[in-house]
Each structure stands twice: as C-alpha cells, then as structure tokens.
Amino acid sequence: MRVKSFPPKKDMEKLKKVVMRLSFLGSFKESKKDIMFIIISFIFTILIFLIPTGFEDSGIQSNTLKCKVRVIQADNEYVRTMGPVKHGYQKLEVQVLSGKIVKTENFKGSIYSTSNNLTGRMEMDKLFAEGDIAYAVLTLTNDNTVSMIRVMDHYRTDKIIILSVLFIVLTIFIMGWMGIKILLTFIFSAVMLIKILYPMMLRGYDPIIISLFVTIFISAIILFLVAGLSKRALCAFLGTAGGILFTALLSYIFTFWFKIHGAVRPFAETLVYTGYGHLNLSHLFIAGIFIAASGAMMDLAMDVSAAMDEIKNQQPAITRFQLLKSGYTVARQAAGTMSTTLLFAYSAEYTAMIMVFIAQGIPLENVINMVWVSSEIVHTLVGCFGLILVAPLTVFANGMILCKSKP
Image (tube, rainbow, N blue to C red):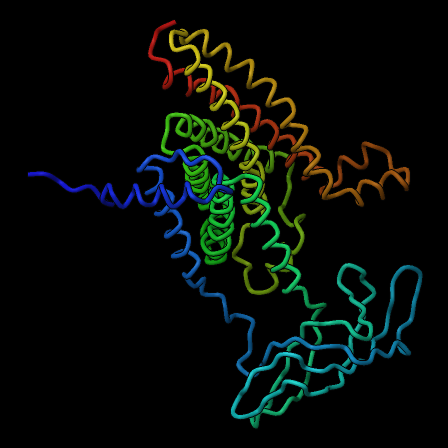
C-alpha cells in the first residue's frame, strides 16, 4: 500500500515555482519539511493572536467611546511655566474626526470643549496646539449625549502603521526570503509575549517559571525558522536554552544577594496598586534579566553554530577536537563584541540618570550603592555572564552532534 505524502508532491513543486518566480525574494532553498514548519508556525501565530487575554475590557467602561479628534483651538492662558516644567491647564476645543454611531447618534464632526490638565511632570504631560490630531475618549450618558471628553494624547496610530509598513517592505526587499522568516519570528515573539506571557503573569503564575518556558519556546521557534530543521539550528537551540537557564539561576542568586526588591522598574509599583498586589516584583525583575538577554544569546549561538557547521561542511574529515578548537576561537571573538552590545543597550536606557549623578559630583561609591544603579549592574553583568556561557555550550553541542569522530 502506497502512502501519499502531505501535502502532495506536485503541490509542493507548484509552491516552490511560485516563490521562485518572485525574484525579489532571492534564493529559495527550503526543503519540504522546512516549508511545512514555516506554514505551521504562521498558522500558530495567527491562532495565538486571536486568543483573548481576558483583560481587554478591564479598564474600559461601557459608556465610553474612543475617537480621533482635531484641536481647533488651544487656550494657554492658564498655563504657568516654572523652570523647565509647566503647571495649570489648557482650554481646548476639539472636533471629532472619527466617531461611532451609537443608537442613531453620530458624533463625527461634533465640537466639544475640554481641558488638558498639567501635573508638572514632563514625562507625563502633553501640550496641544491648534491643528494637532489627538486621541480622545468620550463619556456618554444614558441618552447617548456626551457628558465629558478627555484628550489622552497625540494620535500616532497612522504613523505607527506607516513605520511598520516601511519596516516590512525594506526587510523583504533587502533580505529576500529570509526577510519573510525574520518578520514571522518578529511577529511570533511579540504575540507570545503580549498574548501568553504577560497575561499569565497577571493571573498569578510565577514570573520566573512561566518566563523560562515561554522564552525557551520562542527561542526554539525562531532558531528553527531561521536555520531550518537542521543540526545547525538544534545546536544553536541547545546553547541558547542552556544559557537562558544559567542566566535565570544567576539572576535569582544575585538579585536576592543584592537585596533588590524589584520595584525599580518603571510602572512596577503602579501595577501593584492597580489590583495586582499578588505579583512578586523581585521575580518579575529576575525574569526581565534573562528575557532581555535571550535575544543576544540566540544571536551568538546561531553565529557560532553556523560557523562550525560551515567548517564541518568544508572539512568533512575534521576531528572533533579540531572542530571544538575552531568553534571556540569563533565563539571568543563573537562573545567579545556581543557583551559590549549588551552593555550599550542596557546603559543607554539610563543615560539621563547617569548624567545626573555626574553633574552633581556624587561619589562613585554612593552611586553604586543606590538600588536603581545596583539593579542595572546586576542586570548588565548577569546578562553578559549568561551570554559568555552560551559560547562554550554551543561549541560543545556542535562538537558532539556535528562530528562523530573521537578526539
């Protein structure tokens, strides 16, 4: 009895021909199993995206309506400038640009008066000028009349869409077929974090445990999508998974040794006060360390794995010892630059804080003993330490899997 393959061979050939006709996609060398894995990953991403988190309507009242408005008048008479900050409020007149018909009431084109209160915090306040497009929320009464309008911030949805389209087009144009896989991994990672990881932590799952499972799963999908279902991808995944586990362990040890409470992250304390007091902020801080470092770990592991796989292909007779030695040489070079990359990425987020300490002439010992600075030291060094561990783990995995000969 002859078993038919799924999908049929002729259908796979047609799919390859269609893709190859698209010259801008570049070379297409995917095997049948790789194509199936890409399709399954794409479908899986869509299904996860469609899953409701359960928190969609948590902060939305039934009598509210979101809309886009244009500021047609901005009165700054009651705005007071005190140094670099502003206090008081703006009197605004806004016109609804996009509304929703609710019980025969169409708000599009309607003009309303409101105020924009300023708190004196530059990071939170926003000033509007005539002609600005803003995002607003209308509060309705029982008879569907507007009782209040609150201007939230400048409207940026259209700009985000334009930026996203440019990113997609340029990625595919420059990277070709690999660009499509890069976009899939990018979207898959974002969907997993927003739809799975964060909601599960809000529901009370331990941030460390659930983050480990989700991060390792994301790493597996990304690496096998990029490198295909190959030994190269398997070795890179083993090195990445080992590095994530080691980083999680080191994060746990040093976070409690340094007595970092976890509320050093922006909005962490706000999260507790909004009804989620069950969250362990220290565990949330620990999870953030190895989640942030996992991307660099995948990068390093794939670089090392690809180099060793290429060495093995070019020198099939190479011994395991020689392959391990060559791989370790590559790993040391790659890890050296990647550690600096992490340092720049982490320190850039707190540039203003560091400049404040320098400007005020605060002694170095005073600075490093502050909880904000200590937390960043732990974050940076533990992340780099985990990255360093990925190199030998990936080299060892490649040596054991790619080369069958003994030393």
